[in-house]
Length: 292
Image (cartoon, rainbow, N blue to C red):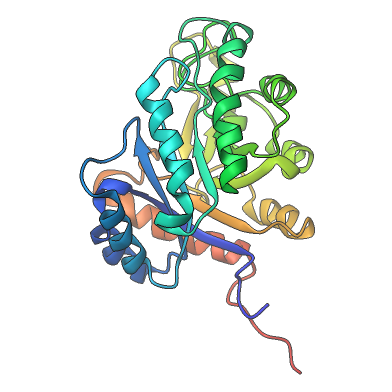
């Protein structure tokens, strides 16, 4: 190893922004980028747009493509995910496409499983043929087990059901502590258990207000958790990175911004860069080569 190239630290940028956004923020020290889309791909010449992003990224890694829609009920979103699978390597030299598993909105998680098997069975085969891997984001999207919204992949029980339905080696997880803490799950043992299936991390944490919960419970209408940038939440990211490195994990932790209630608006990039530098310290600080 000649650098911290086993675990890269980066952020998210919208595909439609092209290379301009990356050129502005890259000097802050970001090492990787997830190129994300919300429900649809941009219009226009995507090959040209992708080439501009690659040029702007320079020696930084494009870790993955994010395609966040509901492919179980939105055929266009499913088609866009398939297009990302087909072009991930050509566009960005990456082999990960990440997104929601989808849901039959308003139905229970088990009721969505037949559609999950049908839609993702075809997409998984496509990914296998292209040498690409699919990572399911674990956000609940304000859905529940009984009434899912956008994404059934928000619980370890659901993950077990999904991977039992489809045993494809192309299917894994895009994980972060945030959604686990919101469900009162300890993310550390979960990370140890599920690490073989975790291929990409979002850098997003959470703060749980246990004082509010103890006084009012969870049904009072009072907010008792917040999404946070790493370094401002409840997770010790040194422990997260220790677990990754002890398992010889390689990949990227990309900060998912625009959620922190404090470092948002004019303070968005202040928070992201502080989070980036915190994660670099958790990774061990500056790389120092051993003497020969």
